[in-house]
Image 1 (cartoon, rainbow, N blue to C red):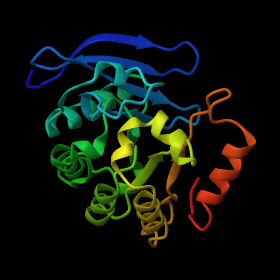
Image 2: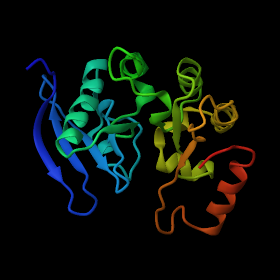
Image 3: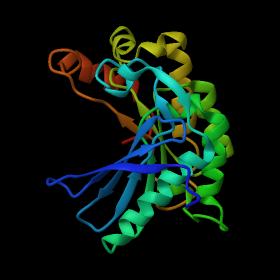
Image 4: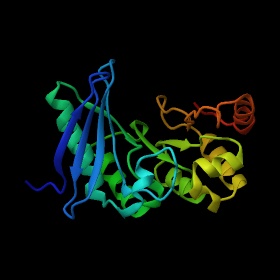
Length: 232
């Protein structure tokens, strides 16, 4: 009864067993949270950090909403709690948290960081940092701050093109940052010592769009961009 978010819709996938929860905030906005059930019995939650997004990616439905507001720390953490309950009902245990839902997490540092503190706290969720992934369109200073404050956390970069002009079309907000600055931050984070045996390298996210960023030149640019950067 004390939860901030209300489940207003539940959509179950017949393909992979995932469940999308549509949640309503006290001020009437709706966000989405996805419970992902892998065949290995591992269960993850894809959580949102904002109502809408200002990155402007043309292939993303959330971008068309624009940005209404950021979620507070409790609204972010409650999504994980609801996902854990959802997993328990199917005899599973929530293992991983990924911030790949609605919004740009690093545009909401003031609330994402306290939420991460809650998730990792031994007095709360007790989720190890290596099982938490934060996905970002690439905000160099914020990426460094995240890695400094939460060493061991997994970081994913939504790159989508290693050709600057194409990336600016796919992720319009990134026109505000320098290409070299992003590359420097990525290299810094990716080459830091791993704190845990299970800790993976930086994840590079690259959506393929036919005849836009799926050609030979795109592949060659990506290979060159990631030289010397441990990543998957």
